[in-house]
Image 1 (tube, rainbow, N blue to C red):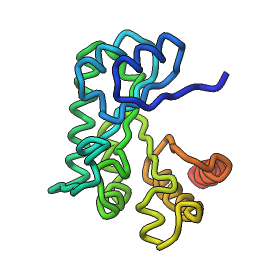
Image 2 (cartoon, one colour):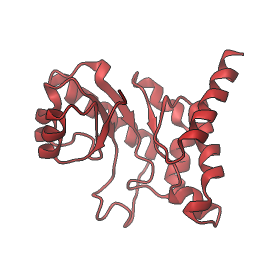
Image 3 (cartoon, helix red, strand yellow):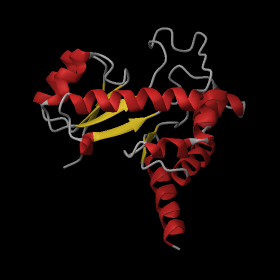
Length: 186
């Protein structure tokens, strides 16, 4: 009874896990491949479109943007249109700016600071910043010590429009969600 999400950029993996009943496909390549779109278009699974500059092998070599927020939003908007054109229902989509995927700490902080900019794309927004280098390098700590920083940035993300958090520490994230929800209802 628990939804199962798979992160992959490989169309053959997408097809295989869909045949097994997976609920969500998160393509770290943002469904940039027509073959990936073909693999998921006729399914009922939720689809998370993630932004990544480069490939997993080179994405952190020298990430560069003229305007990271605008470029990521433009990419996500373009990919939404590609999926809709392929017949994917809008209700199946969510967006992930791809914190840490081809982005420096400064890029990640700019994305988080301006997260509301993504509300022009009317889809649920996923933020996955849990224990990432942006946190532990900024604080000069280890990933194991990054829980407090993760909770702080998850809280900021929730306040700025994130509706889904990808986390390592479920209890703490759930508490942040409950408190922000109570604050919004007050």
